[in-house]
Amino acid sequence: MKNFSDSIKYIGVDDTDIDLFEGQYVVPAGMAYNSFVIDDEKIAVTDTIDSRKVTEWMAGLQAALAGRKPDYLIIHHLEPDHAGGIAQFVALYPDATLVASAKAFALLPQFMELPADVKKLTVKEGDTLALGKHTLQFIGAPMVHWPEVLFSFEQTEKVLFSADAFGKFGIYDADPDDWACEARRYYFNIVGKYGNQVQAVLKKVAPLGVKTICPLHGPVLAENLEYYIGKYNTWSSYAPEDQGVLVAYASIYGHTAKAAQVLAKELEGAGVPKVVVSDLARSDMAEVIEDAFRYDRMVVMAPTYDAGLFPVMEDFLNHLKAKNYSNRKVGIVENGTWAPMAAKKMTEILSTLKNVTLCETTVTVKSSLSAESLAALKQLAKELA
Image (tube, rainbow, N blue to C red; front, side):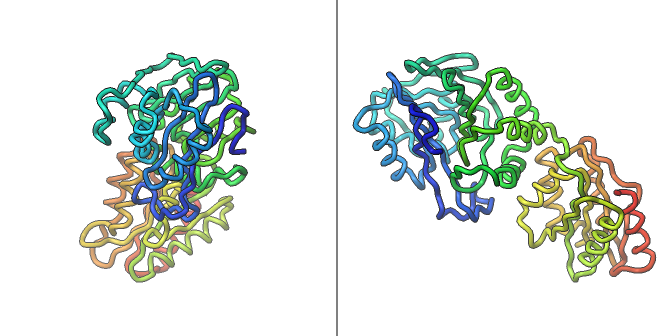
């Protein structure tokens, strides 16, 4: 489905050599950088790609143009994984006009030096650009997830070019059946802080009658759009997606890990439909963040460390705080031998989060499970169930 239209051609590139996206997210299936050519009386190219793959992108662009010259380069998003080919594009097509928001043009010199006479067209919310049979309507999408972002809506074929929204980890995939897992991990770790801004742009898009969504990462979405838009509405409103409990733990010598497994069995026995147990020291942090937002309940379990909180748990909770974790119920389990402090430290962070309800039962494991702490775990499971 790469060329899903006679007039709109896909010229993106898959990067299967990359190990970490944005220097931190594991991408075992690689990453897709999407770009399109709108072929009309005036030819528009939407975005470039990461500099790692610009040579392949330029070859695909020239093949799609078949000797013609583009009139416009639409810059929806200036992040380097989509702007890495702008300088090469301008060098090859000096008569083309760059189209972007005022904020994008203000930031552009921080990334690259372009000729002083480069042609620029500044557009804003509601502006249109006629290409012939096709017309692009621009939609402001600030902080989704940078301040300069624009969406554009092609009015004839009703195609939404959605910048990073509706993107996912992984290479370009014409079959979007596996979309949700990697789209969720992408959303909460990259866009998640800006739920209010996503909600605002979804309201702008709703009346347009979109038939196809072209994100900057992942597959083109052209069927069952209610599903994808519904997911984004749930995620950006910080509402739980599924009923279940994430048990996120850190353990030094295995005692807290054992308590986590005992609690998981108690939760399952109490009828919780889904229980996910994650060792924060060994799990992909981005996946645990994804699960924290996916489910309506969570338990955090960690030992005291240097009179404070075990570092990986502190890191996890600060990640959640940065991404506006909210509207959930959370249980706390601490471990300590002579001066347990983990529960106090976890409570301090969790208490700053919006609409996060802490369970009445706080469990303290003194070194290893005892009859007393086991009974407390069972009480916590009942409260969460």
